[in-house]
Length: 265
Image (cartoon, rainbow, N blue to C red):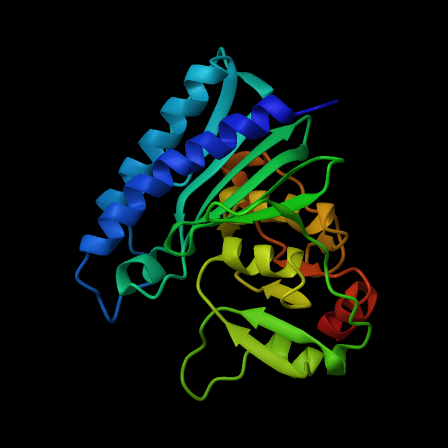
Protein backbone atom coordinates (compact mmCIF):
# COMPACT_ATOMS: atom_id res chain seq x y z
CA UNK A 1 0.00 0.00 0.00
CA UNK A 2 1.14 3.53 -0.74
CA UNK A 3 1.23 6.04 2.12
CA UNK A 4 2.25 9.09 0.11
CA UNK A 5 -0.65 11.22 1.34
CA UNK A 6 -0.05 10.25 4.95
CA UNK A 7 3.63 11.12 4.58
CA UNK A 8 2.83 14.47 2.99
CA UNK A 9 0.45 15.34 5.83
CA UNK A 10 3.02 14.28 8.44
CA UNK A 11 5.67 16.44 6.77
CA UNK A 12 3.27 19.39 6.71
CA UNK A 13 2.43 18.93 10.39
CA UNK A 14 6.11 18.70 11.31
CA UNK A 15 6.92 21.81 9.27
CA UNK A 16 4.18 23.82 11.02
CA UNK A 17 5.41 22.75 14.44
CA UNK A 18 9.00 23.35 13.34
CA UNK A 19 8.28 26.94 12.31
CA UNK A 20 6.74 27.60 15.70
CA UNK A 21 9.57 25.88 17.59
CA UNK A 22 12.32 27.67 15.67
CA UNK A 23 10.85 31.06 16.54
CA UNK A 24 10.42 30.06 20.18
CA UNK A 25 13.89 28.50 20.31
CA UNK A 26 15.59 31.62 18.99
CA UNK A 27 13.91 33.74 21.68
CA UNK A 28 14.81 31.38 24.55
CA UNK A 29 17.19 32.14 27.36
CA UNK A 30 19.30 28.96 27.68
CA UNK A 31 18.80 26.78 30.77
CA UNK A 32 22.13 25.15 31.58
CA UNK A 33 20.96 22.44 33.99
CA UNK A 34 17.65 21.28 32.55
CA UNK A 35 16.33 18.07 34.20
CA UNK A 36 15.58 14.99 32.11
CA UNK A 37 11.89 15.20 32.95
CA UNK A 38 11.43 18.78 31.78
CA UNK A 39 8.30 19.71 29.82
CA UNK A 40 7.57 23.18 28.48
CA UNK A 41 4.73 25.20 27.04
CA UNK A 42 6.53 24.75 23.73
CA UNK A 43 6.05 20.97 23.98
CA UNK A 44 2.32 21.41 24.49
CA UNK A 45 1.86 24.02 21.76
CA UNK A 46 3.89 21.99 19.27
CA UNK A 47 1.73 18.96 20.04
CA UNK A 48 -1.48 20.94 19.54
CA UNK A 49 -0.25 22.14 16.15
CA UNK A 50 0.64 18.63 15.02
CA UNK A 51 -2.46 16.84 16.30
CA UNK A 52 -4.80 19.48 14.86
CA UNK A 53 -3.24 19.06 11.44
CA UNK A 54 -3.36 15.26 11.57
CA UNK A 55 -6.93 15.19 12.88
CA UNK A 56 -8.12 17.54 10.14
CA UNK A 57 -6.67 15.29 7.44
CA UNK A 58 -7.52 11.92 9.02
CA UNK A 59 -10.40 12.49 11.48
CA UNK A 60 -11.01 8.79 12.06
CA UNK A 61 -7.47 7.87 13.05
CA UNK A 62 -6.32 7.33 16.63
CA UNK A 63 -3.74 9.65 18.17
CA UNK A 64 -1.16 9.19 20.89
CA UNK A 65 1.42 11.76 21.96
CA UNK A 66 3.82 12.49 24.78
CA UNK A 67 1.81 15.30 26.37
CA UNK A 68 -1.36 13.17 26.55
CA UNK A 69 -4.34 12.92 24.23
CA UNK A 70 -8.07 12.47 24.86
CA UNK A 71 -9.22 8.91 24.28
CA UNK A 72 -11.77 8.59 21.49
CA UNK A 73 -13.63 5.25 21.51
CA UNK A 74 -14.73 5.93 17.92
CA UNK A 75 -11.16 6.23 16.62
CA UNK A 76 -9.79 3.54 14.30
CA UNK A 77 -7.20 1.88 16.55
CA UNK A 78 -5.73 0.03 13.57
CA UNK A 79 -4.30 3.39 12.42
CA UNK A 80 -2.39 5.14 15.18
CA UNK A 81 -0.46 8.39 14.85
CA UNK A 82 2.43 8.52 17.32
CA UNK A 83 3.81 11.99 18.10
CA UNK A 84 6.64 13.44 20.14
CA UNK A 85 6.27 17.23 19.84
CA UNK A 86 9.78 17.91 21.14
CA UNK A 87 12.06 14.92 21.50
CA UNK A 88 15.06 16.10 23.49
CA UNK A 89 13.46 18.97 25.38
CA UNK A 90 16.70 19.37 27.35
CA UNK A 91 18.52 20.14 24.13
CA UNK A 92 15.77 22.61 23.25
CA UNK A 93 15.97 24.57 26.51
CA UNK A 94 19.76 24.36 26.65
CA UNK A 95 19.82 25.76 23.08
CA UNK A 96 22.36 23.25 21.77
CA UNK A 97 20.21 22.27 18.76
CA UNK A 98 19.83 18.64 19.88
CA UNK A 99 16.06 18.20 19.62
CA UNK A 100 13.56 16.97 17.08
CA UNK A 101 9.90 16.67 16.17
CA UNK A 102 8.84 13.05 15.64
CA UNK A 103 5.70 11.88 13.84
CA UNK A 104 4.89 8.29 12.88
CA UNK A 105 1.91 6.30 11.65
CA UNK A 106 1.43 2.73 12.83
CA UNK A 107 -1.06 0.64 10.85
CA UNK A 108 -1.99 -2.86 12.04
CA UNK A 109 1.02 -2.79 14.34
CA UNK A 110 3.55 -1.87 11.64
CA UNK A 111 5.24 1.52 11.33
CA UNK A 112 4.44 2.81 7.84
CA UNK A 113 5.35 6.51 7.99
CA UNK A 114 8.13 8.23 9.90
CA UNK A 115 9.27 11.86 10.08
CA UNK A 116 12.08 13.29 12.22
CA UNK A 117 12.48 17.06 11.86
CA UNK A 118 15.43 18.92 13.39
CA UNK A 119 14.20 22.54 13.44
CA UNK A 120 17.48 24.09 14.60
CA UNK A 121 19.26 22.61 11.57
CA UNK A 122 16.49 22.91 9.00
CA UNK A 123 16.79 19.17 8.35
CA UNK A 124 14.07 16.54 7.98
CA UNK A 125 14.63 12.80 7.62
CA UNK A 126 11.56 10.87 6.52
CA UNK A 127 10.19 7.78 4.85
CA UNK A 128 7.26 5.53 4.17
CA UNK A 129 7.18 1.74 4.29
CA UNK A 130 8.73 0.20 1.18
CA UNK A 131 9.89 3.50 -0.33
CA UNK A 132 13.20 4.15 1.38
CA UNK A 133 14.45 6.83 3.72
CA UNK A 134 15.21 10.38 2.57
CA UNK A 135 16.75 13.53 4.00
CA UNK A 136 16.21 17.14 3.00
CA UNK A 137 18.14 20.08 4.42
CA UNK A 138 16.75 23.56 3.86
CA UNK A 139 15.64 24.05 0.26
CA UNK A 140 17.95 21.42 -1.17
CA UNK A 141 16.66 18.45 -3.11
CA UNK A 142 16.06 15.32 -1.00
CA UNK A 143 18.70 12.60 -1.08
CA UNK A 144 18.21 8.96 -0.22
CA UNK A 145 19.67 7.69 3.05
CA UNK A 146 21.65 4.50 3.47
CA UNK A 147 23.08 2.99 6.62
CA UNK A 148 26.82 2.51 6.98
CA UNK A 149 28.67 -0.64 5.99
CA UNK A 150 30.84 -1.04 9.08
CA UNK A 151 30.95 -4.75 9.92
CA UNK A 152 33.02 -5.00 13.10
CA UNK A 153 32.09 -3.53 16.47
CA UNK A 154 35.62 -2.38 17.23
CA UNK A 155 35.45 -0.20 14.12
CA UNK A 156 31.98 1.16 14.85
CA UNK A 157 30.69 4.58 15.91
CA UNK A 158 28.10 4.42 18.70
CA UNK A 159 25.70 7.29 19.37
CA UNK A 160 24.34 7.67 22.89
CA UNK A 161 22.84 10.24 25.26
CA UNK A 162 25.11 12.60 27.12
CA UNK A 163 26.60 10.70 30.04
CA UNK A 164 27.55 11.91 33.48
CA UNK A 165 31.12 13.09 33.78
CA UNK A 166 33.43 10.15 34.40
CA UNK A 167 30.69 7.58 33.74
CA UNK A 168 31.12 4.89 31.09
CA UNK A 169 27.70 3.44 30.14
CA UNK A 170 27.56 -0.33 29.91
CA UNK A 171 26.88 -0.44 26.13
CA UNK A 172 30.25 1.21 25.60
CA UNK A 173 31.93 -1.43 27.76
CA UNK A 174 29.99 -4.26 26.12
CA UNK A 175 30.42 -3.15 22.52
CA UNK A 176 33.88 -1.55 22.70
CA UNK A 177 33.24 0.78 19.75
CA UNK A 178 35.94 2.78 18.02
CA UNK A 179 34.22 6.09 18.78
CA UNK A 180 31.26 7.43 20.78
CA UNK A 181 29.10 10.41 19.79
CA UNK A 182 26.74 12.03 22.31
CA UNK A 183 23.52 13.91 21.65
CA UNK A 184 20.09 14.45 23.13
CA UNK A 185 16.98 13.14 21.29
CA UNK A 186 16.42 9.54 20.30
CA UNK A 187 14.95 10.89 17.06
CA UNK A 188 18.24 12.56 16.21
CA UNK A 189 20.17 9.42 17.12
CA UNK A 190 18.02 7.14 14.98
CA UNK A 191 18.15 9.57 12.06
CA UNK A 192 21.95 9.56 12.35
CA UNK A 193 21.97 5.76 12.07
CA UNK A 194 19.66 5.96 9.05
CA UNK A 195 21.85 8.55 7.34
CA UNK A 196 24.97 6.45 7.88
CA UNK A 197 26.62 9.05 10.12
CA UNK A 198 26.94 6.53 12.96
CA UNK A 199 26.74 2.74 13.03
CA UNK A 200 24.54 1.95 16.01
CA UNK A 201 22.46 3.28 18.88
CA UNK A 202 21.48 1.56 22.13
CA UNK A 203 18.63 2.86 24.31
CA UNK A 204 19.03 1.38 27.78
CA UNK A 205 16.20 3.21 29.54
CA UNK A 206 14.07 0.76 31.54
CA UNK A 207 10.92 2.75 30.89
CA UNK A 208 10.15 4.76 27.76
CA UNK A 209 7.28 5.05 25.27
CA UNK A 210 6.34 4.51 21.64
CA UNK A 211 6.74 8.18 20.73
CA UNK A 212 10.38 8.11 21.81
CA UNK A 213 11.40 5.74 19.01
CA UNK A 214 8.56 5.01 16.59
CA UNK A 215 9.35 7.48 13.79
CA UNK A 216 13.08 6.79 13.93
CA UNK A 217 12.48 3.03 13.80
CA UNK A 218 11.08 3.32 10.28
CA UNK A 219 13.92 5.56 9.11
CA UNK A 220 16.56 3.03 10.11
CA UNK A 221 14.81 0.03 8.58
CA UNK A 222 14.00 1.88 5.34
CA UNK A 223 17.64 2.92 5.09
CA UNK A 224 18.68 -0.75 5.25
CA UNK A 225 19.33 -1.13 8.97
CA UNK A 226 17.78 -3.19 11.73
CA UNK A 227 15.85 -2.24 14.88
CA UNK A 228 14.96 -4.57 17.77
CA UNK A 229 14.79 -4.61 21.52
CA UNK A 230 18.18 -5.04 23.16
CA UNK A 231 17.80 -8.84 23.36
CA UNK A 232 16.97 -9.06 19.66
CA UNK A 233 13.18 -9.37 20.05
CA UNK A 234 10.95 -7.40 17.65
CA UNK A 235 9.69 -4.00 18.81
CA UNK A 236 5.90 -3.77 19.04
CA UNK A 237 3.79 -0.63 19.26
CA UNK A 238 0.41 0.21 20.75
CA UNK A 239 0.74 -1.82 23.95
CA UNK A 240 -1.08 -0.61 27.10
CA UNK A 241 0.26 2.77 28.08
CA UNK A 242 2.30 2.77 24.85
CA UNK A 243 5.11 1.42 26.99
CA UNK A 244 8.47 0.08 25.90
CA UNK A 245 10.35 -2.04 28.43
CA UNK A 246 12.90 -3.96 26.37
CA UNK A 247 15.26 -1.16 25.45
CA UNK A 248 16.22 -0.52 21.84
CA UNK A 249 19.06 -1.49 19.53
CA UNK A 250 19.32 0.17 16.14
CA UNK A 251 22.19 -0.74 13.85
CA UNK A 252 23.28 -0.79 10.22
CA UNK A 253 22.27 -4.45 10.12
CA UNK A 254 25.80 -5.77 9.61
CA UNK A 255 26.55 -5.29 13.30
CA UNK A 256 23.22 -6.37 14.72
CA UNK A 257 23.82 -10.01 15.63
CA UNK A 258 27.19 -9.28 17.23
CA UNK A 259 25.77 -6.30 19.12
CA UNK A 260 22.89 -8.39 20.50
CA UNK A 261 25.30 -11.13 21.58
CA UNK A 262 27.67 -8.71 23.30
CA UNK A 263 24.86 -6.83 25.05
CA UNK A 264 23.37 -10.10 26.31
CA UNK A 265 26.69 -10.96 27.88
